[in-house]
Length: 125
Image (cartoon, rainbow, N blue to C red; front, side, top):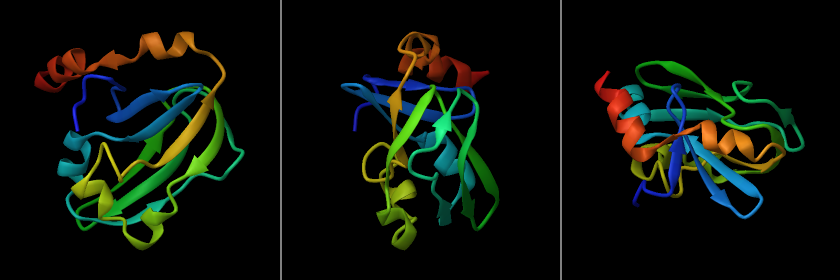
């Protein structure tokens, strides 16, 4: 999947706008660094979030990592298939490996996120 329509955070989450919703996952870079994902803690439906709030966690054979909200809003959907198949984060981080959908409450926050080109530059450090 192309990353052209995605935005990224410095903590390696990606965000994709779908109307009023923002779909959230972790970047290919992040899943690669984690290794084989073995468990995903999903956020609670209805949780109210601000940018940088922890929405869940990912465990792998190498490490554990928190997942943070890229924008403010309410969690309106979670990817329950990750409970049975957490490896989807490895195989399709920008597709079936999405973690949650947030009903965004502050559209301007979207503009503060890095586009794909800026994220690639960020990774080069």
